[in-house]
Length: 103
Length: 192
Image 1 (tube, each protein chain N blue to C red):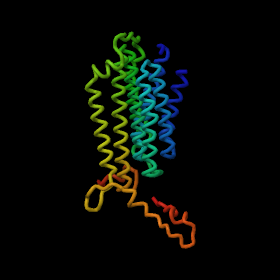
Image 2 (tube, rainbow over the protein chains, first blue to last red):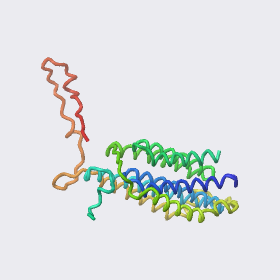
Image 3 (cartoon, rainbow over the protein chains, first blue to last red):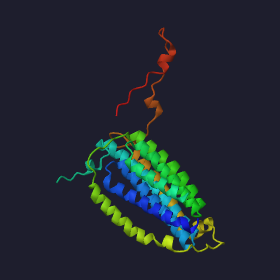
Image 4 (cartoon, each protein chain N blue to C red):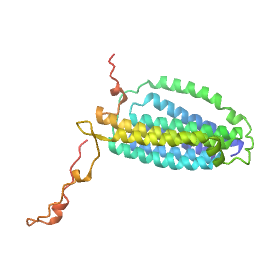
């Protein structure tokens, strides 16, 4: 990749991080929260590989990115299983319904 | 091409969050994963790009579709957790700070990587502990999934769903009616 395209990688990383962070703050559907988390992690993966490319250690960046991909997938699977259990027990995917505290 | 990739990736990410149905959101997320894989490949990381494409755009999408089919669609049209202006302000400020930390990615001239180091050498020898942790994490995730989705009887004993218990034995006595009707009873309507 040429140096002229690195700013676009930087913009993409920030765009993905912004979308994921905004989604985590605003959304209430459990499945959509997991989707927003996935977008956030995609930005982090791209940032790891870009950092490896910039430092001249692309193989180390790749190894870390693969680790993050595996961890992210396992987190998504377990989170979806928990969301399915929440839907079965509570009857809704709204995170507000999970709170047992009453103000 | 980089401009179009950037615009497409951010467009897919925005549509993932704005999608009305969960299935549409899962499909848009697959698009984000595919475009991220293209970016990763263009940065000189083909192995990571292949893994991101197959796992992120393939496996995760299938898992999402399966989970949506089990749990069902649910449209939640209520106020957001945090008000939109506040959420924009917090996320915008965070991204500005992150952007300043990530700026060296653009500012530093990429140094040539050592020719002797291959992905396999680095992954299995230098980052061997990471590989071992990933294997353990996959097993832990699979066991957690089985325990979360396993059925429990009233006594608390774990049970498995047996096909013999759910499908009744066929009644082969005709009574003047076509046998096909009895062997294949009409499907039950499952109400969620």
